[in-house]
Image (cartoon, rainbow, N blue to C red):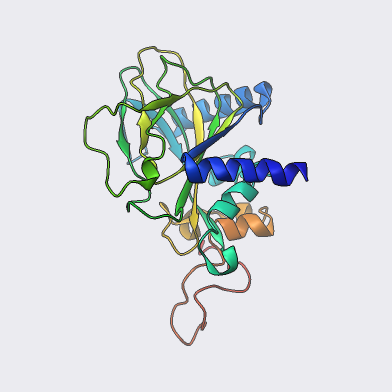
Length: 262
């Protein structure tokens, strides 16, 4: 019963305010371990990444970088909240969902992210994308905390460039916390005025029929695929690869996960 109340509370927050926050989900030692691995990965891949931003340290596709990230694909503390929110408005309020993107980021001093809407449409009363941010450091007033406009997911418009809105809010939270956002809510980050770290993991989920940011079917090694559980394979979209043609499969969804191409 307590779990149901917990889930309902956070779903209500996401639907009404556009966001919710859960404190003390990760232990501080685990945050430090993930942060250390993230820094090492950035140094390893920074010269190969095409999506370069000089004011941000970023690593994408965490599932194929280190096994420590795998459990966050379907983490027990958040996945039921995400699934129920992204099922609203579907048939019987039951919908398949997918992970559309995973990344770990650390903005640099001087960085500020423009307010934006990740859902790419406005005014939808049914959430299409949920962003889950795992805090590996404190998010504070100086290090570029997530900036939002509460209830803006209900607006029939997009945020204007370089404009500060009177009801903007900074999502300040402690290391180990998790923030869930309706992707349609206007959000970005405050300007970072310090050199202190502000690492955060982002796991972005959507309804199954939307396109992922990267092609997991091509970037997931078979040895990693074989270690995933059944639901993790589903969340990475291996049940939702379109059939080659009408002779291959009659449904847009397969009954069981299909192995990646490589």
